Length: 527
Image (cartoon, rainbow, N blue to C red):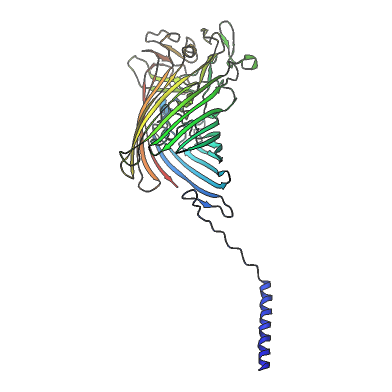
């Protein structure tokens, strides 16, 4: 018995030793895999980045759009950059756009509040505009950063998707970039450095320093010639950035709706008195240096107010009212997305025997002249910067028929108002012999220096949008818009257009109000 026990114990000891030796030769056990975990702190769609306490959400949306007599995303063309305005045979009756947006939102809890980053990268392909010299359509692809901001402790810095001057409901009831008449629209983003304070009960206030140079319109020196109506005005006299736009915003978001009030100031800074140096009767073009001097800077700015009223008449019904007044900051009212510094729309034949009709104007933040006479020898100055006044507003109502169908109607107006001095400078460029063309009455008498010449401009418009959401985060819809354009010249004024190669014929065009009709079919999928 004793021998049996000894054998069994010896075998067991040998087995333990053997097992230990084999275990020592095996690799170490792998660490547990860190699976992606749901982050419920910030709402649906957030997950923890493995190995960190940072939550991330990746989303975006895709748009497929067909425009009719418009470009971009239902942007009516009001300048002569393509055949939509000239009614020539290069006119695109339809225009397509495909856009892909990718959003990345990260958030981390810190002792000073949530540290957040947010970015939007946009890639798009559009129908080419015009033809190059080789007959191939111009480049249509675009990749851009619409947003790229860091937020922490109430501070925001980076490229924001919009300006704090803009009201938060710019696209609540329409898709068009020109449908929010009389209001700012900084779509595409701008750099901001801002601080927002939450007062509680849905009330907040923001102070923001912003770089608005890419959207700012130019300052015009009457010593320079103007191009024909509707084309880019020509030589740019705007100077560089001196200090950022200063924007203040008050915002209220409550159960009844919301209120937005903002103000901004901007410095109108001219580089030099570009365009020439004065003599007794004429201007010698080409002089542009420090020796030419420059007019004094002038501070401009604007005020924007907007309301949203939630209505009990349907599913998420709302009434929207907004308007803007500006001085020396035309983009606060005439949104500078595709419109630039000149408007020009051609129409058909008329009853005066002229070739056709036209309406248009120039849109500058300020007008001045560095010379005593213009290129045609007309006495006009010199004068300092004359800041341009712009104002307007819109009203809209959106009704939800049920959870799937929604319809909105909207309308508004915007106005451009030059001072008497600024108008005199602009009108002087259309005297006899001017390369910009001439303005005459029906009898052929030049009216460039009479009360019949007035470049103030007005746009009124109405529109409607209806879309269907058959499933969550999918919208399919249409939008239509009409605008009417008018310039304030006297009755029976005729524009005698000079020769422009490849453009409308050099002929006489009656100054006459013009209508623009447009539409868009859009399919959008959000994720």
